[in-house]
Amino acid sequence: MTPGRLRRIMTAPVPGRPPTVYLDHAATSPLRPEVAEAMAPFGAERFGNSSGAHHVARDARRALEEARDLVAECLGASPGEVVFTSGGTEAANLAILGTLAARQEAGLAAGAIVCSAVEHAAVLESCRAATRATARIAGVAPVELRVAPVDGQGILDLEALEDLLRDDVGLVSVMLANNEVGTVQLIGEVVGAVARAAPGAAVHTDAVQAASYLNVAELARGADLLSVSGHKLGGPKGVGALVVRERVRVDPIVHGGGQERDRRSGTHDVAGAVGLAAALRAVAASRREESARVGALRDRLAAALVAGLPGTVRSVDSARSLPGHCHLRFDGVEQEELLVLLDERGVCASAGSACASGALERSHVLAAMGVPAGQARGAVRFTLGHSTGPPDIERAVSAVTDAVALLRG
Ligand code: PLP
Image (cartoon, rainbow, N blue to C red; front, side, top):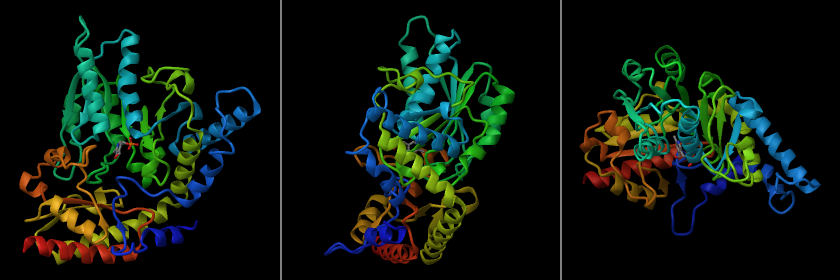
């Protein structure tokens, strides 16, 4: 399937419903045609268990290792540094809990973890789990969690971060780009600050959102651990990877047959690994043009809505945001109501902070940015991606304008 055909299918009208305008790529992206094609043989045909000894297993292992080579190349790692996981969430859990477990195993104090105030729940909850787990062990000082603040655009306060870094810090986790508002962090600066103030600490960066547009191999070169997820890239759901540099050790959090050099057990999802590799390759091949194309569409959407709807504020400037993110706050509007009206008009957007039940939670990201609760209630995230075209923007502008006018009465 060509990208043009995919776009036509995604925007084809459902009887009785307006055409779908999918602007929720930060939640998940449709599978890229080239990814679907790469994965197709790994269902019924090349179905082997990559840990076996016969030729069917060897064939699967070859495919897995080719996928690993490609993932490593795209992420600026060596193949041995790539650990396949069940997604970004597991990659973050392994980075945080696995690093702390390895430190304890090596007789080092669990110490403290430092993260930014705007991390995804996968990171925040892993950090909190580490503090809870150590608090339960008699005679062990619990891990302390220190949270570094951000400014009004979600940019990490590097001075405040440096104040939290001391010799007792075992791990620092700062995302490369934020899922909700799209802010890109200066990871190189974070790595430099950690090297100066807490040289024994490992640095993890959650590159799940950033990998769709940024050259993470370049930007996160100094990080010790880096996580990515297939489905945010136009790859499959349920697969991700954690890069673990040779210099750092992680203990497994999923135990069993010792796959992934004893860092993550479980029969390999060969199709998933092949899909993740194909998605990363597709992104790398078109990164520059796609960033410019999607960024221009995003700017058009933001400019039209800010100009056309007084009382609309953009949360993060284009210069500091991923190209696909357009996070807006509409005065006098409740986000739940706006999202329902947009859905009725065919537009899929999001509040950027839904929990597993789909219910909207107060956004910890907007709270950390100092956005007043009243304004946060009118916040909506539009995220564009590889299947977004100019007609999506025209339709979205018209639907949002119409819906906001209706809500403001
Ligand atoms: N980190 C970030 C920044 C994300 O946006 C997400 C998904 O929304 C995750 C981690 C979790 O990734 P996955 O859905 O693959 O578990």
